[in-house]
Length: 64
Image (cartoon, rainbow, N blue to C red; front, side, top):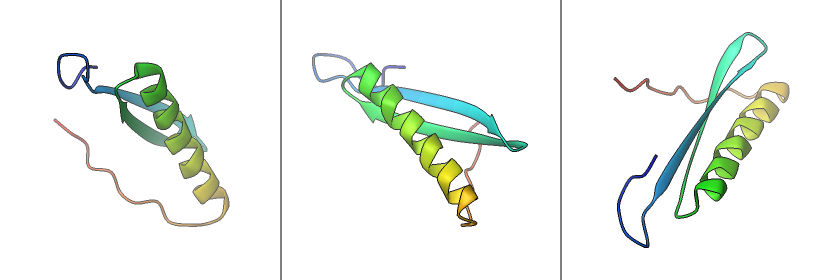
């Protein structure tokens, strides 16, 4: 999803993954939508690793 317009437009990617009965959400922003998608995927992977390590995940507020 585009957040702005023009040559330096920011794109936002959101990825939702079900893991261990939990819904994990990753978000990424970049001028390159493929890079934004990679950032979102990396955020989900990091969340999964935190779960495996027994670390608490921050709560994410759901937007309307």
